[in-house]
Amino acid sequence: MTGGMGRAGGSLLAGMAIFLLAWTGTGWATDIQVTATVDKTTLSLEDSIQLSITVRGSQSAETPELPPLPDFRVISTGTSSSTQIINADIQVSLTFSYQLLPLKEGQFTLRPARVVVDGKTYSTEPIPLTVAAPRNTGRARNVEAFVETYVSNAKPFVNEQVVYTFKLYRKADAQNLNLDMPYDQQYFRKMDLGKSKRYTQVINGVEYEIHELSVALFPIKPGRVELPPALLEMDLLYRSRQGFPGRSPFDPFFDDPFFGSRSKIEHKVLRSKPISLE
Image (cartoon, rainbow, N blue to C red; front, side, top):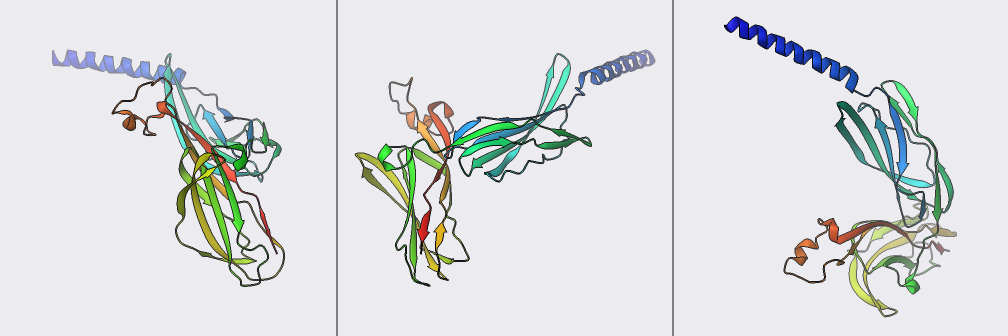
């Protein structure tokens, strides 16, 4: 009796093994496809591009070799993988994600990226891009957010302190702020002036929340020099109450950004104007 059950169990296992081998042999996709996609092809200097390079048919691809991108700042935002079973067909993919921040206006072509998969090199298709000037800039246009920079003295002497101040004006909530205030280290040495300030100000009848940060620059040699635009990268949070005419005690809880159904997040890159010093 025991031997009979053993033979039956062995036959069953053998049958399952044959089925799995047959399914695996026909189910795994063998064609490799490598594609590059972006979330937009037309944008302004305030926006960013989400670039995704996806490898379908394998999860063992090497990190993509991106083309030269001198007109963009490139930030890797991670890698994700996916496995799906559709009609006994196993489909796998691997996606490399990047954020591209434009540095100037113009017409550009995102040239092919190259990806090595199992020793073979694949290339993506080129993607045309258009970068326009910011749609709204400055306090006169009553925009959701804008930035300004200024100096205490545009014609300092050598070793004289120049206070370089950055201001963010915003109406919407902001998070994930990242500020870059570049300067030429051949012409200046820098000293921090303490923590940033935060206060409100009414401009053209509109109240703005203001973030202010100042640093001290000391010119170390004479000449004309330009302070490049300060660059602020951040997420603006727009809260929406459409479809919720009444307020309840639970509203503050559901207003949390974790509950995305009641808010919209927009990634922004704001630039100030360059400043010339003599």
